[in-house]
Image (cartoon, rainbow, N blue to C red; front, top):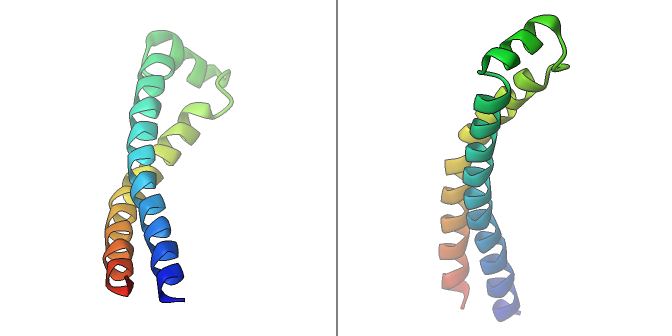
Length: 88
């Protein structure tokens, strides 16, 4: 039973660490899209007219959320892996 609990804990920890890297890639992708679609002259005109349907604002909010949760995901993943290692 302890072996199963340790393996399960390690998988959860690895998933959290993987989520840190996924969040990092998502932040970079959102930054690129915001630069291309929202910070250009065409994008700014689209925001003023409302043609972007709020996508620039939503992108900024999602990016900010990912920035906030990125490091807690890494810390939680490392902590869960360390706790799981003691179970083995």
